[in-house]
Image 1 (cartoon, rainbow, N blue to C red):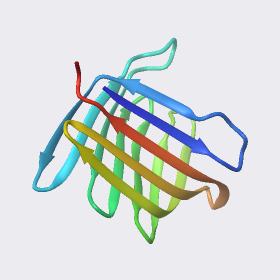
Image 2: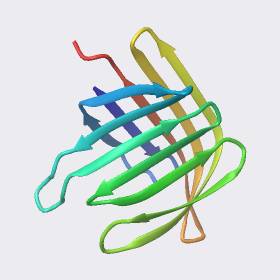
Image 3: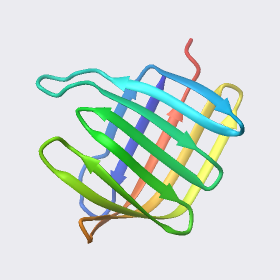
Image 4: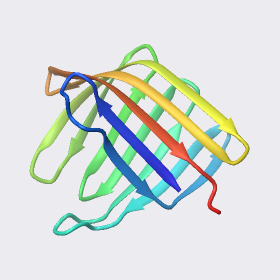
Length: 134
């Protein structure tokens, strides 16, 4: 099971949570998590692949949301995300990326500054928790 919590600290908004069954694999030292968020009302399903290295994270989405969002430790990362009705130009300045693996559990924390279409939005934190299915 995967649980992802994304918080924008400066906006006062509640964390955005995603939970779904997930698969996990390691290929040549790179960790891959894949999962599908089911359709919700008129929103189509969203398939997601998260690729994790020691100094970067990439989130690729297809379905109701399309594109990829990049996080590179210590440098700006430019991405585009298509929401279907709006395309966003995203820049993340990642200043913290921590990966912890214990037994069959994986925890990843990313802290970053979020810019959308050239405007600073918020200081953010994303926590990814992957736990072994019981």
